[in-house]
Amino acid sequence: MQIEFVSATSAASGPLARIVNLDALPADLDPVLAAGAKASRFSGKTGQCHDGFVAAGGAVQRVALIGAGDPAAKDRLANLERAGAAVTAKYLASGETALTIDFAGSGLDAAGAAAVLLGARLRAWRYDTYRTRLPEDQKRSLTTIRAANAPEGAEAAWAVEAALADGIEFTRELVTEPANIVYPESFVARAQERLAGTGVAIRVLDEAEMKALGMGALLGVAQGSVRPPRLLVMEWKGGPAGGKPTAFVGKGVTFDTGGISLKPAGGMEDMKWDMGGAGAVAGTMLALARRKAKANVIGVCGLVENMPDGNAQRPGDVVTSMSGQTIEVINTDAEGRLVLCDAITWTQKEFAPAAVIDLATLTGAMIISLGHEHAGIFSNDDDLAGKLVAAGTASGDKLWRFPLGPAYDKLIDSPIADMKNVGPREGGSITAAQFIQRYVDKGTPWAHLDIAGMVWASKPGATWDKGATGYGVRLLDRFVRDHLEG
Image (cartoon, rainbow, N blue to C red; front, side, top):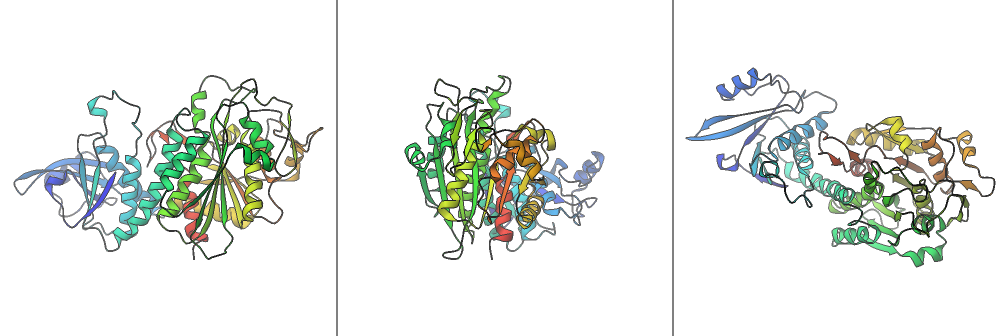
């Protein structure tokens, strides 16, 4: 979606959209359009949309009224995003190729206008690459949104949000692609291509390098696949020279069959998005680089495919992680924590980060607990946890904190190794987090985000279509803006 700033509206620019607050139809509205809006019970509620036609300068102009809700609402910017998304959703496959959002008389400041445009762009994202026989009336037609009479500073504010949109869209792309297209090597290649020229330094560890480092946990997951694993490292140095970086570590299981502990066939196709944590990390790094974030950040993605061939890891196997700790693999479908433990160990040894935040579609138990409304957060540091929860509230990528403690930790003790990779059925998300915590260096602030219920949506949301949501990018970007940038 192209966003353009123009100085005036034009009937030749397609439909004209106006932002309308709750119960506040513009006084200068065409009487016929105003009557139609009232007859259809349009009141300016957030996300409402009413369109009609008016005569303007001897031509017929299509006009859309977009509800932005109460201007005094605490979540005003989120409501403005929903307003922008609503107009995109209405016209995306309408046959219209462009529309103009007229900000004259809207009362919005630069941040408000940028929020409208961000919602409009995010809701326009749709991945139709493999849909070759779409009916004409279902094809995406809208390609351009023009911002007319934008408030002062809106273009600069939009430049920042456009970078965020770039990152979210990249994450959605990675998560949406099927596993025969995006696998460890091609994930790396796509990240290298997208991050080229941004200033992000990229390093890639191959299977031999990881074996030499002793990453037996990560490599154990990968050994059943013909697709070799990779560790993708992305480094952005936008902060003070020599300053300790904050590390984002993502689980990147590009397809998860469950391995020998095979998943049920029904719905297994969804496991292409089991790399949603890695996708969020890659998208975040793109967003930070595009907006030149003044922070030092490391993004690390542990990339594997979990397959059940004759060389696959077996239940009961014992592997040695890079940290030297041994793991009894009780269930090969509890593989994400095996990937993360080695990725986190390597990240700490290589960078001694100020904090480690990992993201993973880790447990089905998290979906049972929170559904698709929040991701779970576990942390050894109250300050870090509080900052992330606040960033989630501000960005819309919401988090809910769960407990950690010795009573849960002992549930993953093994009789023959240092630990098991799963505990009992109860508290499954917590014992998974306890497992990861055993690999966090003493004194290092750490948070684990279990995002299993958030990376994929079975129905459209406010600013996304059915499918990949891009969850995590907004959360991490907001955390960086609020707490890592001076």
